[in-house]
Image 1 (cartoon, rainbow, N blue to C red):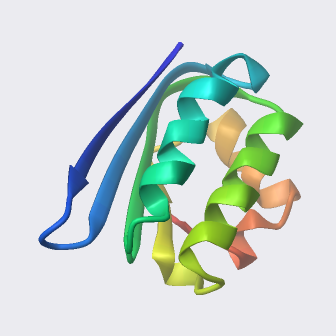
Image 2 (image 1 turned 180 degrees about the vertical axis):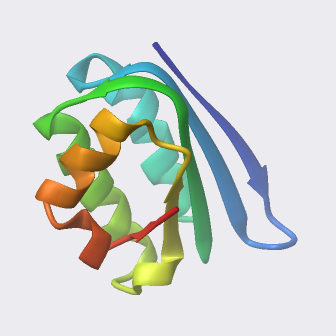
Length: 101
């Protein structure tokens, strides 16, 4: 389980990739993402292609991240999630808060 990031200050974009389990065990790593998002970032792309599992603490972390970049749905794009993770996001109505691809 890991979180990798790529910050593009010129385009004000943050790329985030979460591998393994997206749960409270990566809280400290994800906290660094929220700190980077506070630096004037306007778009965050979250790649869940290697995320095997997501729980309610992950949903909470995503909501905190959303607060950092504003309430625009297009500000955070969650992409490449597997069917199980996509189902969790949809049940939690995150498709109304985030752009799910």
